Each structure stands twice: as C-alpha cells, then as structure tokens.
Figure 1: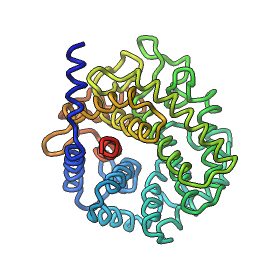
Figure 2 (figure 1 turned 90 degrees about the horizontal axis):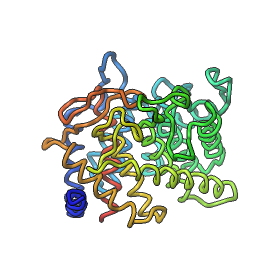
Figure 3 (figure 1 turned 30 degrees about the vertical axis):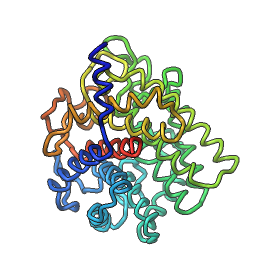
Figure 4 (figure 1 turned 120 degrees about the horizontal axis):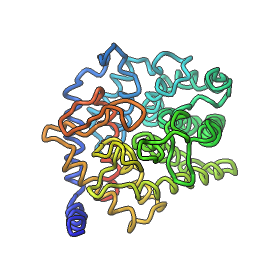
Length: 376
C-alpha cells in the first residue's frame, strides 16, 4: 500500500513541459527512422504506407500537432497523403475499415485547409460503402465492422465526414454500423454488463480464457474507447437535433460503462494487461494503456468522468509509460505486435521491437497529447 501511495504521489510531478518533451522524443525517433513517409512497409511482405498501422501513427501525429503546431508535422503528413493521392488503401471501392483508417487524417487536413482534393476520394469511398451489403455478414448493409478494431478505423471517418460536409447521411450510417456490431453481430460484441468488448464473433461465450474468464483484449477495447472519444468530439461540435442527441446519449453511455470497467482493470503499476480480466497473459503493455489514458484524460476535461476518480488513474498511467516503456532515444517498449487477442506478439518486453512500430507510436501520441491538455 505504501508503494502504491508513493507511486501516485510521484506521478503528480509530471508537468506539461515534461509531457511535451517525452511526446516529442517518441515522435522524433519515429520520424527519423522513417524519414521518407512514402516508402512501403516490409513486414513479411510489401505493403503501402497507407495501411492501417501507419494511419494510426498519423492520428497520433495530428493530436500532437494540435498541442505542438510544428510545421514539420504537416509537411510530413502531406507528403504521405499526397503520395497516396488522398485515397484509401486499395482504392475507392474498398469497404475494409483497415483500408479506410488513413482517411481520418485526410479529413483532419481538410478541416485545416478546406482543399476539396483531400476528401473527394473519401466521399466516393464512403458513398460506395453505404450502398454495398457485406456478403461475409449475411449481406447486411451495415455489417462491415465485424471486428472491433474496425470501429476505431472506420467510425471516426464517417463522423468527420459528416462534420466536414454537414451531410447527416454519413453520421446516420456510422451509427447504424456501430449498433450492428454492438448489438447484432454474434448477439452483440459489447457486454454491457461488464462494460467491455469481445474482439469478434470468435471470442463471445462460450469462448473462455484458460482460467475460465471472458477474453477481453486490451487494445481491442482501447480501439473502441478511442473511437467513442473521436465520434463524441465531432457530435458535440455540431448543431444538435433529435437524432444527434440520441446518438450522443448512446455513445456517452457506452463511454461511461467502459470507463468504469477499465478503471477496475488498471494494474497497480499504472499500466493495463493485454488481457483485461483474465490472468492469461498478464504483463505490461503500451498500446491499450495509451488508448485508455487518451479516453480518460478527455473524459475528465469534458466533465464526463470525475477527476477525483480518474485523474489518479491517468497520472499513474503516464508515470508508468514514461518509467517502463519510453527509451532514452524515444523507442517505445512493451508494444504488443499485430494480432487479435492477448496472445499476439508474446512474450513482450522493454526491448522487443514489434512487427510494426507505427501504431504503437500513434497510440502513445494520442495518450500523451490528451494528458498534456489535461495537466496544462
């Protein structure tokens, strides 16, 4: 107990300046290592740099730019986006959320410059998906987000497009796809009783972890948590009508259910395990922790979460990330590799390089930028 109190006290020592310094260090490491943003990735096979792992990095970079407006970040982003012609990976006819994730940054840039070229292909892509049933989901028109990662990759694209254009159809479609994943797919992927999400249909009961617990993957729930924050940001920024008020109520309720559940899952050292409620694969992990920090810090600032309950959790999370994960040169340890459950990329360590580094940096920057705003 004394160690816990000591840790909580030391976490209060974080300052806006120290948080910014750490965020910059992690980002500089990445931008130096991947100096040319157009170069394809080469993990087992060649993939264009518009794939989802890199797109998540740019989500984090846009968050960093909001609090640290360095023109180099915009230049780096525009060089990447222009190379890919402001188009989703695999073209405008893709309906895969992983391909669409890069469109979040295209839309963020559009909101800064209002250059139509940045979103014309996004519009074509979303209009195509909105009229395309998914043959892998019983031809459900809204059945494209069959894994919860897709909610983060795809839902903010739709809400940002609604915000950019004012066209309600994008928001309505996003909410129908969200509720299909939430309530219909495999009986519903969101366990409202426990406030956590099953990753996809393969993990709903009767599937259990070896200790008999439900399988709730940290980064999977983190993806949804981040999507709720981003979507609520867009919803709260726009004029309200009866429909949008109903959407806000649903998303806020889900955010609160998740927040309370996640608070109970935090490790004493401030991090979260890859497996949120099971003893299977207990251990340190950065990506889920960063996404939970992002959501909780935002929730406190927007009066959805009580600071007395959640601020200590944010402080402990940041202290643990700095202490246990960030190397002196900005490399990030304890990043779980790509996959779909707590077993992915195991065993993790402080020095292990994951198969992809980019989304780990993106998650970290999201959490760091929002925590900076909280303590600033």
